[in-house]
Length: 520
Image (cartoon, rainbow, N blue to C red; front, top):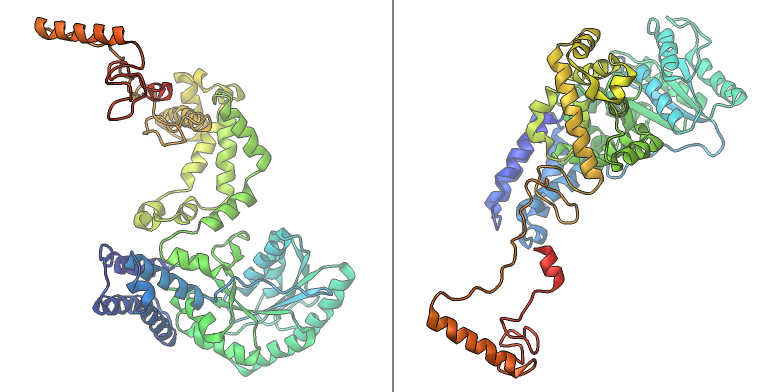
């Protein structure tokens, strides 16, 4: 969603690189480009003005003029101001001291409240809570049935005593749900309310009545990140009518200009708490302003990537694989390879995961062209093998490869490529696990590296050569005899010479320390 904004900001900062000092004209030109980038991304005009004013004031101050790298200092200022616009620190859910905690969802029809209720319930369940979804949208056709299906998919409880489709009192349903939750010992109640295609008095009154009936701990305003400038107007209307406590962004995976979503927190003074970025129940997480700002500026989001990995990967499985690799990698089989692939797939789209890495914005097109079905095809090929073939891929001959290709619906060449890549991957992983570094790569201090073939042999030390000139050779032999006659600690070399090479040793007797010899 923020790709266009990221590209414009990256191009702006690129023009600053290499400049030792930034003049006022440079800062004016930079802030002008940032202003255009934000307006093109659909950020509200009052927000843009406040943002540019802050950036310009700080850029003209001492923190940039006295910096060793002014360009990096400008990026730092923009990053900090973006975090401030997005709400500053991460906002957590306020749970009630005496349960159940009541969370009410409000917003326009089509913003994704019902789907988001299921995602929020699933997220809370992973946080060791027991949520209950309550159907208070009794106007929209089949809204009650939809929430029931969503609840089943998310694996959480559902409460919907009224059939909906215009039948029933939503305020009474909301009130009864609190007693039901206390009886069944649910600690969080998520109330899904009705929406309208536009703001009207009836909608606001119903939402206000439900709020008065259940006295929620959190009122979350669900805003469609794709609706543009109207998001700010709608947010302000709901703030006046219902007084929500936090914002949830839905459809953040769209390709619309999402600048209006950046404006909501600044205009309303209410922080963005959650973001939904996909269709699956897992495509939902807490909103971190600092991480979002980092993504917009192309710095990646490594912390979110680590959190996803921690949630997905089994610690016991990881230790088991590591022990196999440290043992030389011979015990690492295609079954282990398949298990690793499946765990990576659980983390989500490969292109999304790569997009979280710093600097990946420069190869965004290549990342977007990655097809997750390629990983599924690899899994199908491995699953078409017998247990013996997975354990020892060396036995996979021509006829076996033809059978595997037919079984997995691919060409024989793809089976060949997989087997070859597996052997290469196993070789590389075992080399890294044993501290030898990556084969074929130059050595890194402290990490080993470099293949044995590429390592240069140490030069063999040779004895002192005698001169071919008879007169000069006679002089050298006489000088050597004189040194032997004087014995150790005598003669001109007794102080170690001009370089302090050691008492009693002349240049001819000097030897490198053993450590230096070993190093060479």
